Structures are given as structure tokens and as C-alpha cells.
Length: 55
Image (cartoon, rainbow, N blue to C red; front, top):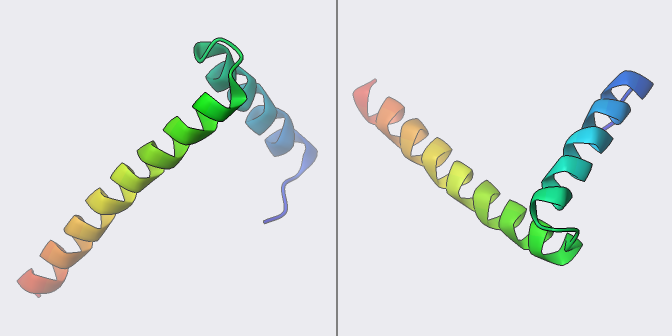
């Protein structure tokens, strides 16, 4: 994925805020992000399955 400088700056700011929420613990923040992404993927998969079943 290629980001322009504006997108990169926005991503950096968001990442810094996320790490700050975890009191500067980058590994803890990364682990939570992985878990959150897993939950979101499960929801996407469920919606996709439901959509396919209704077609």
C-alpha cells in the first residue's frame, strides 16, 4: 500500500494516539489491534455469509 504524505501523517497521528491510550506500551497496543482486527474480520465474514445466503 502506498500512502501520500497527508495520509501518512494522519496514520502516524492515529498510531501515536492508540499507543498513548496503552500508556506507551507498543506491544500491548499491537496485540489489541490484532484482536480488534480479528473481531472486525469475523463481523465482515458473518455479513458476507448472510448476504450470500440471501441471494
